[in-house]
Image 1 (cartoon, rainbow, N blue to C red):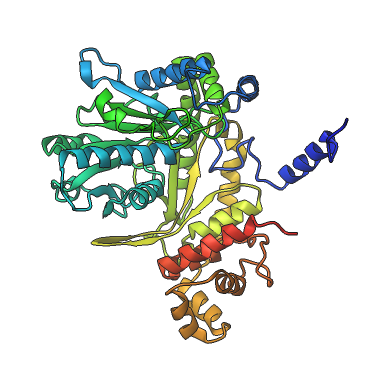
Image 2 (cartoon, rainbow, N blue to C red; image 1 turned 120 degrees about the vertical axis):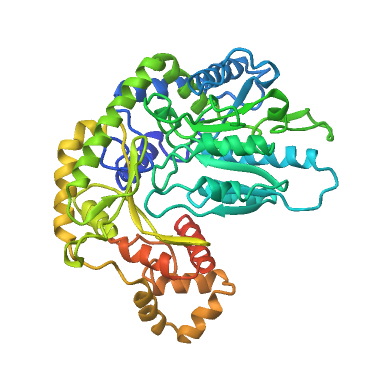
Length: 508
C-alpha cells in the first residue's frame, strides 16, 4: 500500500524551488549568518556524518553511546584549543557540553552563574546582576529575561567599541552573579579586556564568562592577541560555536566551565514523575545528533592544523578588505577589530558631500549581489551614542572572491557617496501623518499593541502587504533601519515580533 499523499521527488523539487529564493549559502556573497569554508568535501563529510546518526536521540548517551563518544571528542578538542587542559588544575578541571548553538550556550552559562550565586547567598532576596558591555550579544538580554537577573550594561567607546576597565570594575559588588566579556564582540569585532577584568572579578570572587561564540574557533588559531581564554585564571566559563568558524552545520556550540562542581549546576534533573529519570545538561531533552556528528567529523578530519589553515585564509581576506575599506573615501572601520569580521561606519572627518552612509552602501552592494549586514546606531546610558554601521563576516571562501568583492564595494561607495543617511525622525513623522489619529495614535501604540494594530502599523511603514499578511521585505533596508533607530525601542520590538510571526503564518 502506498501511504504517500505526494511523490517524494515532487516534494523535494518544491523544496529546491523554495531554496532558490534564499540568499546563497556558499560562494562568499553573503557576509553574515553563513560560514563557508570553501571546501565542498567538508560539506559532504558533514552531510554523511549527520545521515549516519539521523535516527539517534541525543537525549540519552547511555543508550546511544556514539553520542557520548562524539561529545567527548568535540569538548576535548575545544578544551585543548582554548587552553583548558593545563596540567595541575585538579578539581578545577575544565569540562563542558555540546549545545544547540551560541544562544543556548550563553543561556546555560547565565543559569549556572545564577544558581551558584543563589547557593552562595542563601535567603538573599535581591535580584542578582549580570554585568556586560553594551556590545554583548543579545543572547544575554534573553538570558537575563528568562532567568531573572538584572542586566547592567557598561557603555563602550564609540571609537574602539570596547568598555573601559574602570567602568566595569565600578559595577562589581556582591550582587553580581556574572560578568561577561566578548572575544570578539559581534557588532564591532572588538576583543574586550578579558585579562584586566578577570583580575578584578577574581578578587571579588565573581564569575567571568567569555563569549567567544562568533569568533572563538578563529581566534584560537590567531597569533599576537592578548590572552582571553582559560589561560586567564579568572575566566570561569567560555562559549564558542562550531557552526560558525568550526564550519559545522547549524546548530552546534560548546560551553566550557572551569570546575566539575560548577558545571553540574548547569544540569536539570528530576525523578519526580513516573517515567524515566530525566537528566539534561542542556535546555532540550530529545535532540538531534546530526549537528554533533557533523562537528565531530569535521574536527577529526581538519585537526588543529586544518583549522589554522582555514583561519589564515579568512584572516588574509579580512586584511585585504580592511585595506580596501581604509582606502574608500567617506568610510571608516570601527576600532581595531580582531578575527575575521569588522564593522564599517561613515567617516565623520570627511566633508559631508564625500561621506558614505554605511547603510546606503550596504544597499548598493546588495544591488550588485553582495549581502552585507546593516546594524542600527543606538544611545548608551552614561555613554556616547554608537554610530550605525555595516557588519561584514569574513570566511575562508572570501579569500577566493575578494578580487570581485573589493571592486564591488568601491563601486557601491561611489554610487552613494554624499547621499545623506535616512532621517528616521522625518520618516516616522511622514508615516505618522498617514495613520488614523496621527502622532497621538502612535504614542498610544507604544503602550501596547494587539496583533491587528501592529500589522496595520507595519503595513503603513511598508513592511507588510496591505492585508497584513506576510510579504517581501523592501529592496532597500536603510529606511527600515532608520525606523528601528527612530521609533521607541519597545514599539520597534513589538512590531518586529509581529513581522516575524506574520511571515511564517500559514497562507491558506
